[in-house]
Image (cartoon, rainbow, N blue to C red):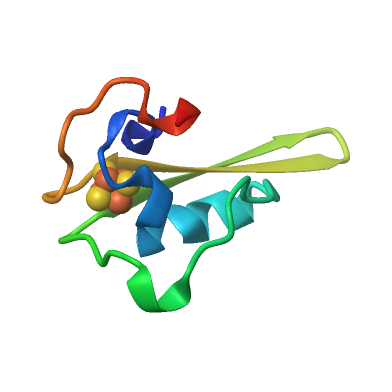
Length: 76
Ligand code: SF4
């Protein structure tokens, strides 16, 4: 599971915006590219599953030195 959903920076983080794009999830807010926060050492875990003819790729940020716990940040 992506730790970003409970991080204070989720709404202006450059790494999370990349992961979000990989999920084809449109952002609910317009990101200002000049205000993006650059996190320290995010680790992205990519899981690739192949079921018959379907290839699923799942991206999650699993560690990050900039993480600040703020439960429910993804809902704001
Ligand atoms: S955990 Fe790191 S990569 Fe994820 S939103 Fe927070 S600062 Fe960005």
